[in-house]
Image 1: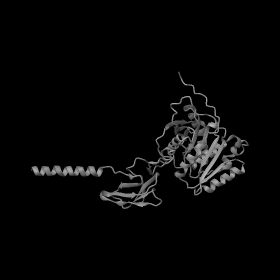
Image 2: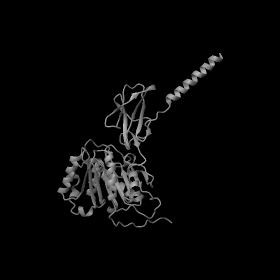
Image 3: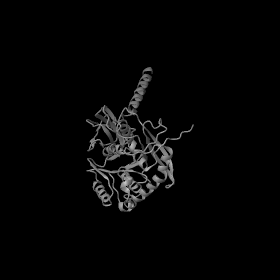
Image 4: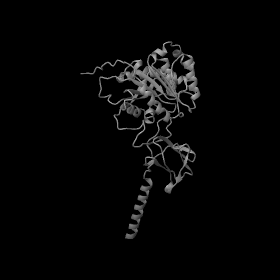
Length: 375
């Protein structure tokens, strides 16, 4: 009887240990060293599992013991990668990885590879700013909206100083969180400011999806609603909440793809609000219609200090952007046309922010009145 009880206890113990081992969370991705990463997924019923996004082609994963699939990727360059698993033809995020790319339909996990020499958008041991998250009520849209604002290092300690602001817009599948969560805009500014390459400034990152009923390819309704929300709610909120320089010389506007279109259209139509205007990989449809006010402004070149348009030569929107640049020339509007290497992707857009920010607010003798603080 004693031996039977002992055997039952041992069987139960081993069963418990086996269950605990079976339930032990997988480590994925596992960074073995700076450039070697192991991806794992437990899918005992799957017939095929592929890794998508790390390389140009999908990587086949191998089934291991216990239904765990894995693949090892060597020689990964430093950077930020977005990936997913393809399980029997269906995509899924990595359930072992809490880092998910922000967006309107989050469907990719994130991996960051760094080295002893971080890239310009990676964390460095320098003073860091703060990213603030806001909810606000949009008077024009009659609903609650979200907004992110970056304040530069030292903002909280320097209560008598006002700062210029760059209004920075995202692309079609993104949200107000994407420029910081994936674009690392706050770290790019931290590093530029620490190196003395950019003046301390705010970044204002609103949600670009204003029209909830927007149809595919119909940008006009969304643009008009976004413009009304930005000018009627976002600008007043930012200027009332933060110590901004609330003049055109203290504001810049830029964005990527959809956000580039929004930034160019709003900026060109409102040089009284934005003296610095940019567009990254932007397609600007219906320009003659939506930009009629800007094109009719005979003083535009005197009012705007910089109109900066950039796109990669392999971007699928290159011909459209080139046509828009020609349209600006036709209307006598001066712009800085910048063509770089690259496609329609974040590795390009992070570089554009790095290049654009140092051009801002340096040539102005902007008044910086002291801020009255309570006794």
